Image (cartoon, rainbow, N blue to C red; front, side, top):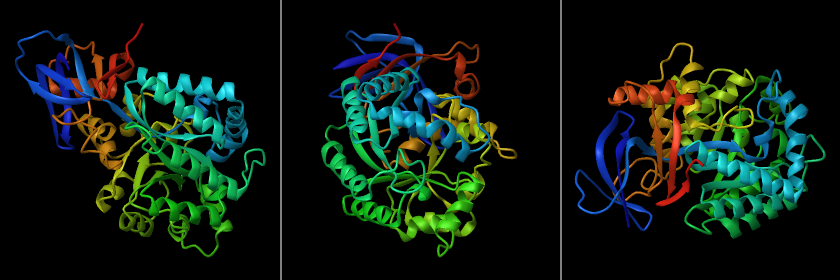
Length: 406
């Protein structure tokens, strides 16, 4: 058991963010067992810090970590000119292990305790990433990218092998520990055959497994999908026809979607991951936030590194406001989206996303150097707009200290 004195800022809902000053958080067996105003025995004094729930990144590409900031004019040229060749490097085991170490350590340095991760289309690279995450202590939902059609040829997989390796990885790593889950990861409709998508969707549904893919990120991508699947009503219908829309599906981007597609997503129970920094970087378009809210579709936030330029979810929070032309994303809403909102997207809000008794002790401690940090509104505003000035001082996952700056 350990006790920490600190100042808690946590969401209880999108409309209810609370600040508790100088409270004692008791951690026992990896869980928050008590939050009180008094404590009589020894404790760790972090009363100069603000403690928030561990940040959650719902869409990020480990194998693209070193390719951040590679300029391009749109998604497809960026993939072809920079990313596919970068992912090929992870076929080398030593490279795959090193980038995994850097990635998971950088996530913790950014205050992120849970990440939903794409790995390059190499089984060994995915195995190594799980091993590294397990040794460091990260909480991950992670999977090998699947792609059995289209370009580039040097990443294209045999369809049966892509499916079988993904199933093998699922059986090995899904819930291998309390911090590890597998997510089936067909890249997008342009790189996956109908047979691969259908087999993946059917297996995932039968085994209550997560699925992640990309949807309607770029207009040229959508045109190519229409040519490839002329019988489909729209891009989203391609995924519905091939059994990829489930309550545990995470759809990255979903920028250029119409009302029929949003209805399809809502009826399936799938969720959407908004990646504002990536969308801004590639000029992909505006996320239809109002429409998605009106439909009542679950949505959250992802860094989408490497088109995203930073693993910091504080930066992603800011970009989620900046990218909207006519809508204001408030500091409270952005904070909720990166914590409890993302936990709800992952259907893990009973255990993650807020600082409450009985939940996992996934905690991020921040040093906020602003004169307004004595009020809830001041702290929230600093989190949204001054993330670059905020220092991550400690990170706990399941009550274990996994990051402290040297």
